[in-house]
Length: 77
Image (cartoon, rainbow, N blue to C red):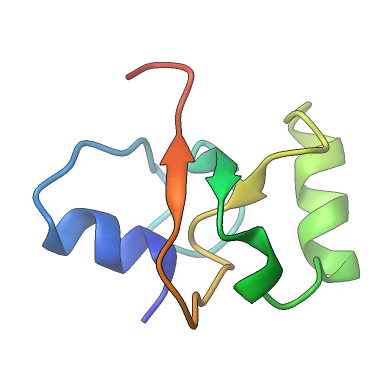
């Protein structure tokens, strides 16, 4: 399950306009705690964030598949 799917399943608001395709990058979130449990950023994720001017420190919720609990923050929350 992606972080985007988990966020939606928990009933939390999250921005997304591309249907989890990784095109819009609106689901970029700051990982506050638990980042060590995530796989490293892929080159595709890095390019998507760069193209959409997303903070390089943020991760795309549609691309991240957490293995442990995370604490995240979105600029619009």
